[in-house]
Image (cartoon, rainbow, N blue to C red):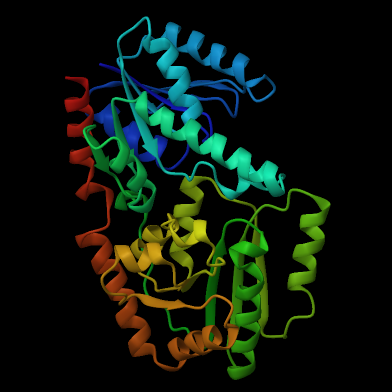
Length: 376
């Protein structure tokens, strides 16, 4: 069986697409091709065909035509799509070639990004149009894969007869090898990775660390910020955030890392942060990196999102906080430094949960079975 993973929003080596879904299907004996329209690349990697062509310069209609033409050359039996646009293109091919179309829902559509350049009535109209476009894409599919609960609700309600699979963002533990737990009284390595946007809580991370240094002046706080500085505005913003800090704060900046580099880098950290603002969208989005941090055998300090409290019945591997309350967040950091036994216990709880529940091995057989059943 020939399977195409069609991506109009993700690159070819996306962690979910290539390192988990494509590799698993290839190991199960399927012929697998990844098509991405956000980059240009032609190669075969680990037995997986990468056929990427950047169509961003074309109109929506032209892009659909080019994707459909590409599918004609690949002759897939099953197409796994990452966006409504990918579903529509696959459906055009489906009209002449009866294939199975699976919509892998991992993003909000529309999201804040789709609406950020629009205001007032125009913003609401665009929101409604994109929402209807997404819902109609659901009607064109054979079935669904859902990355998380809240993004599945409307599709499960409207298309309750269609098969679906919940496939969370659990990592393959072969990619992550935890380092020994360190003594953090003298030096603690803190980590944030993601967008530099204030809505993602970077200022709160820095402010919390600064306040923690005031409580523990004898400890070195090494803050690792993994984010791209793509524009001069980004660089100025970053410089403003990280200048005039206490002497016991060390800032380490890296651009966003490849998947393999990320998996190696995070194992050297002591504590992970995600203090994104609790907006409607953030509150209902389960952070992907959370499960990778658990696999590192380290605790987390995260914004108290509904998506997290819904997924986990108990938080025994860190703290969920009000992301704007930097005094409380600083207290949590210092609490770990002052109580190494609690820190170690939370580390061990994180790895235990990762090994026992939240890893790719626990769900990959269901994924293979779902694809096989969908095909039949």
